[in-house]
Length: 396
Ligand code: ADP
Ligand code: MG
Image 1 (cartoon, rainbow, N blue to C red):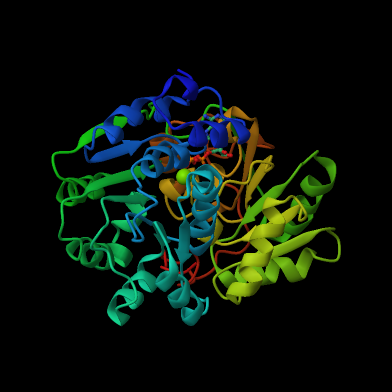
Image 2: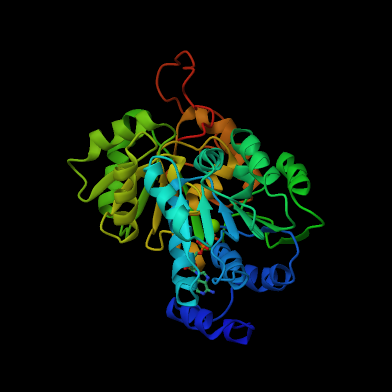
């Protein structure tokens, strides 16, 4: 189905066309009538399938720009995702007079407060800063009619859940709630129904949660050779843009220090950077001014980098959802993507489970270590370090 067949205002139609959207993606087509009819919704679809526009287009349509009040609220787990949402809403809604604004930590509260006192129709927020502003009395949610929780499974996890429950409890009037996600662990599903009222469910998840357009390569590398293997891939392969994930901030710092002389056009991003630096790196990477970005999972979810051809896991991610989100930064909207994960001997048990759960077909560079009866030795057996695979933190 085409967007032009929908009952959208000419301004919204024009804005959508200017973005190059013509046919609706399956998740957009499946959710549009449900959102327009005013139902609560839980929508699951793979990474890069167009979930942002699926919720923002009908959301914008519900806003009355002649009323100076926040009427739409979008809550997201990271600051960069907040910026991305504001941009998308602005591109689609500005010509209709719909004004979005983003509030997130690490940015002057004073400026955010001044803007909020002026005119905002759709507020995009990370939970912590939103609650801060609610306590200060700068944000009023009394006219909100539609709430979107994107990356909903992340927002319903322990680290964010209390904040989300608090925010939702402050919206007393009748409203519609929309949940969007690419992964949904079993234990989170229970919380979904608690958050929604008589919801409709749309799941376009295939048996495997990762898009068909991504190839999943794995390579066993002795820890001593990881650096040289990474450099070999970075020089020998034709990579438009590459995103390299590490499991902790200090690993990002170390890897950046170790390879920055050999790799041109390389940067790093994690939650330890100032927000100014984080935002400028995010912008430059999106604009393709940076070719190689080393990151923690702060860049793992939701971000749309349409030129990323390769995702490299320097460390095997801690769980299958993290793997899906990281690798989902490439292969978006049907474009081809290649994921490469470096493995060491200790990753073997975890890897087996991960491959089974995700139902992906592993392509091996070098030997298939899952088939070997005696696993390769990474070196002398060492005492297991406590920080080997850190547990998931709120601010990666
Ligand atoms: P998701 O949230 O499902 O991971 P996004 O909303 O980030 O995916 O969309 C992925 C990419 O697809 C973005 O670059 C977006 O601009 C593009 N896109 C979205 N809808 C359409 C469409 N109908 N036609 C073409 N491109 C689209
Ligand atoms: Mg998304």
